[in-house]
Image (cartoon, rainbow, N blue to C red):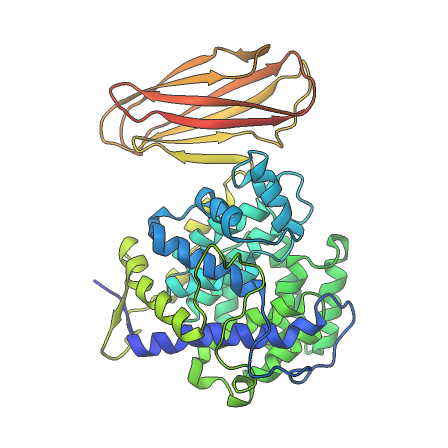
Length: 479
């Protein structure tokens, strides 16, 4: 039985407000993107001609919505989103380009976002987290589970992924909680307390509590993140928080303060605009910010010749609203969309900040790829970047979990290039006794005896006795 009831029209208004705030903040901040100095922005700085500026922050989310519509919420995982990256997203900027190059070389997510990616701590993922929040209003754990699958494609296990967990949780919870400080606490509960994103946010919060100016708070964050460099997630998420704190509930003042902190200004303005848009709803955003940009969606990062995406915020909101009951129903969420009045009396705020799901996400290896073979869930963990040297053993760990109620006999057969050794054996037999409760771990060492440079491929064959489904896990190594 639903613990939370959300009125359909009120929810539509909040989801529309999210996208409207995203367009407003992105349009405000885009002209100042990349500046290292403090800005002095109080309104749009260039003519808008009744349209927003295009922004990849929103673009990628249109592709993710299409993925949900085509595959259902339970079909969303990093491997699938990786394929959508390669099909529909054209830029090769920073981590976008690295993840796509890694996937084209054969690496599946999250390895695609981890391998030799010096941008894995950057901003590409948390700036596109609103779609997961809007599809799971009031359900931050559902939102962060999808945000992880999304972020890991181009950020692996980096700070960029933790930042996406924070913003997705805040945005999802904002549909049912409007208290700023409580929302920040909920967001922090979904990321490791010792990660750099958490440290930067806490620096901002402590500066505000100590009565420092927003400029002083900003400088403390910059100093704290100096070793990471510019355009990185910890500082920029903290700039969002600074705008939120020092804006004191005023929409325009808040997004301008975030943008005035500098750095990735289109992202900070857009994300804070989206958060405030959820809280305030479309009707709560001042008209002076709406009229100059209208409700169109202009894109810059999508191959629109191969995918049809919404052209207006109304169309986008309608498409999201169609999927919300599907997502909530798929996960048995305690939220119901109703024609009656919203009812939050059953809301348990402590549940919103529970960290059980979050800790499961933190424990995932950025070098591990999981495959669902219907009867068995198999995770292959490289343990490190898949770079090899001649004559040096490379340890691989395979974890198997039975997905069915009967006993499972599984054979692992390793197919590797010639002159490669597999120890203890090129074939392993595993018994999984019962559903879910029993997992098995197999460790093998592969040792290349002759290397000539380049890329080396193989595969792990997963066979279950008496079952027709045979799993194939690709293996990729670089000399």
